[in-house]
Length: 118
Image 1 (cartoon, helix red, strand yellow):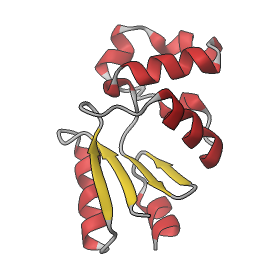
Image 2: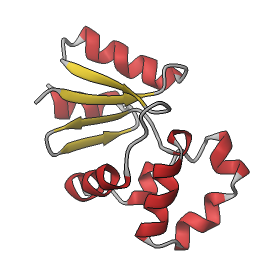
Image 3: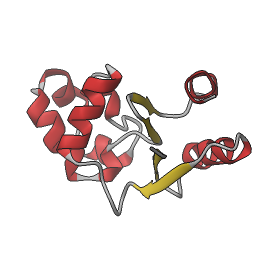
Image 4: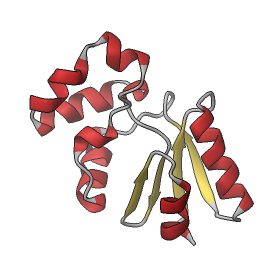
């Protein structure tokens, strides 16, 4: 299965990650997070398969996250509430996300990507 690369083209970190994928010859399918936001089911699956808490999927430095004052909400909300929030708007989701079978990478840390994708 081809790697799934979920990104936001205006995001500098996403551009860096995409460049890294291209330079390392890693095949992927690109999906734009604003046009095609991850669904509740996808986020639930990725959280479980990747062993990643749902809170780590939030774009905590994003404008929408701050406007909605989610900092305290996220700490105490149920998984269902977190999934509802994340699936409601792609701008709330940390990016890029790379999905390779059961390997889920959220955000771009070159060392982590190298370790998991090469």
